Image (cartoon, rainbow, N blue to C red; front, side, top):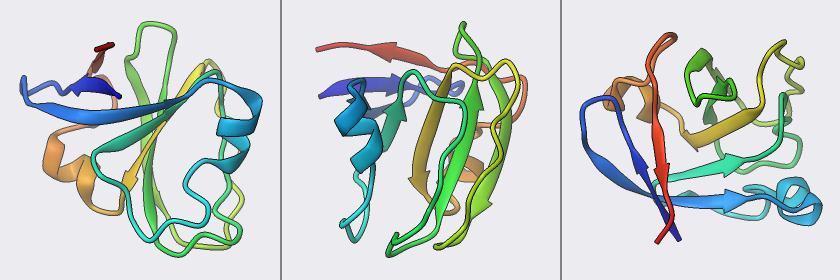
Length: 110
């Protein structure tokens, strides 16, 4: 488990999906997520067969937020140009955390 440092300086638990299988599985089959999930590399996601809505932040190579959107279950997101990572959390979390376009997050491995 890693740590996600938010623009506010707050730290959250972060799960990193950096293998093809882990990215494909993502949050499928779960009823929620503690903290956030980072898909890397990735530039798009889908919520087919998801049990809950998620906030999705597309990040560039420097972990700067390119876009943030909420996706309900059974949606397919378009690939985002320049995105190299996708950060997922429960719907509403990104706004509470201050994650918005232009902000930069940091990942610290434990």
